[in-house]
Length: 465
Image (cartoon, rainbow, N blue to C red):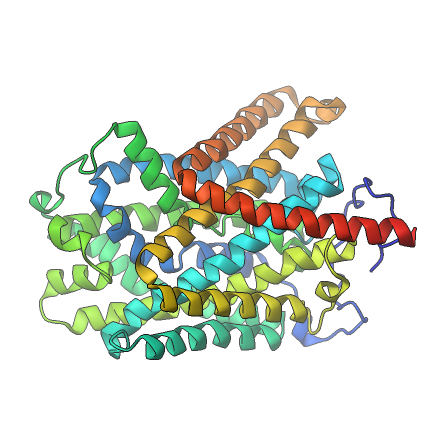
């Protein structure tokens, strides 16, 4: 811990404070702590974005009607704006921690902690939601949902396998991420492109099926769909493990987000046009249903179910690493307990263990309470908690552009970056509104618990100083 008791409480970490020079906290070097290049960093972004969301959310937003396709388009514009913001911020400070580092540098320790805490909640709640969702596709291959505890055990196994991969070191995390990303694209492209040849407009259903105003339907469906875009910040969060991060983080973020957006839009459109609306609303495996409708029989649905499992495990592999990186960076600054700052083979092992345990407890709670509405609630909570670091990162970019540092940027680029940062900030606020009162209420409770933790850690730092 290089900051505890030495750095002023409001002083931001210097650029590169969390960069990892090929070794862990104790100076251990070697093949297990190898840095990511641009291909693996791009695969990390795409693999984390294209996880459970692409396979599940077409059915989740079907009750809103095809207006959800409009929400997908709006969401894609906002996600690209966020990707560009993260790329610009990574040029300034290519340090491990992503939004946490950017918020702390601009606004001080409390904003940095709030970002780290909120992002950390997002990661492990998302892991629990993905594990519960993965069981739905596993059930296509091996019937497990008939017995609650059998399904719960399967979800726990799905959670812990990626954690074991993380314990092997960052080299193996990158390898698993690259392989899972390649394997998942064959069936995804089959549905996204092949489904267009089987497209039937009569199966689309109504444009606006949920009642109320069109704007409210777009906002509500976008709040659910954000779950499928979580991961846009992946390369920025792991910038310390990326080779030449000032160049590669921004490129990996934009390329990965754009690629995921194309697959999302085509895939969702194909599912809407191959599965009847009435059936899609009740579906628990919409991509399997789409392939079955395209080719008949069930073999295609089984193949897609297997691909969905590979995708979700690969997504959990990357998200498990990300869930430990932000508290690691905060622990280095004395804002999280010191145990989160321990590393082995390039991986913050304590952060991985704590995150997986919390996600496991939440998964067990899902099955004890009934995973239907609880799963949807988890998605909306992650929408709120994810927008907190997104909004603070966009605000940090606005701060740097509007402050005295604007003379470091060419006028044309300054105007462009201001517009992009403003779009990203407005997009984040809009998503909070779409999440709904219940999700915001529960998310604020999570944040308030974090304020207590911050007070304890700040008090300990002050006493040590």
